[in-house]
Length: 442
Ligand code: GDP
Ligand code: IMO
Ligand code: MG
Image (cartoon, rainbow, N blue to C red; front, top):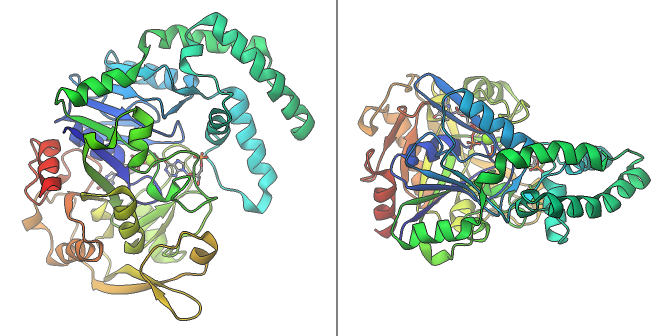
């Protein structure tokens, strides 16, 4: 059984893009299964830096088929821009396919996202304002517009007219705002449709055929486990299902086809937007992590909130996703600290200690982290290419995470480049997908 899911184990921006790009060398297909242009996945190699929002991170491997599956909400403006920018940099997109069932992000979704945020006042979620919540809301309310509509002018015109009847009244009466006109949207979206039409197809059979015929398929998660609509820190979450289960729903593949789930986790924790963050550091150490890790949003440029690694979060992530291994990224950022801390439990105001991540945000808000202190390491490790060459303290750190989570750390990343990576637990650098599958079976 050939499929591997790559999922964000924290609050997003764990370097899923880098990990998927590394795995893609050993894959036949990479499938984005959820989220939309709220995602920003960075891939760096050979002096290039690419920031992908919708296009899967397998696009740089010419033999890999890249699929934007039905679980994704597609903003055609962003996608067309991204395709053009990739082409301008010499990256071919002939191997890109877009699901006809994927929903389309419309200009009124972006408008509503911003207006709803404003209306929330102090309870703002801190969304990316990319129209993600309103687009998924229309999908759930069964009044969305899909890529299948976009590719057929008559169908799109009818769907757009129907949508605007409601949205223009909603915008006017609730938000006192003008809605873009039919003509404006029609003209703009018609031009996107012309570019995207050849890529829009029924992708479910493509993915099914790939897994059924034994090809190696990587499902690329967006966002992170703690941003999941059901399993994250609601309401400070996104509107999709970043968890590994979302890969099945978002692509039309049954759970029995998935045999490994890789949780990407930073060596510390970051979060963008509002919501509880027990290990957040608002001091010099937090600034140290932000500056060394260049922790500014890929999509919005916002400074990311930074804090110590939280293994309560990682254990929960291992549980919710059925993780078979972690990929630990940005370990190099921790160099230079006298000591490093790992959160192993939470303490409630009544003194009780809990090791299970609480599902109730009101409880999480009151949790204080219980830390273990470990010795830090002074050496820069960006040039380290093997486990053996890591400083002893860094090895101890990684091993302690394995002990506290009960999950092997199979990949370690010490810099943004493809080459700044090494593998553990018998995973081979030349065939990482195959050996991660073998590790999952052990
Ligand atoms: P994603 O959304 O999960 O794909 O992650 P982002 O691309 O938003 O953020 C990860 C950032 O860390 C990007 O700027 C990467 O280039 C960078 N990065 C990835 N791996 C490493 C690493 O091991 N060390 C350092 N210092 N940076 C890394
Ligand atoms: P990648 O794939 C980090 C956060 C937003 C906000 C919340 C809801 O790059 O890891 P939304 O626009 O989705 O309605 O915002 O979710 N968020 C992310 N944070 N990385 C992401 O994606 C994110 N996508 C959404 O900051 O708190
Ligand atoms: Mg990101």
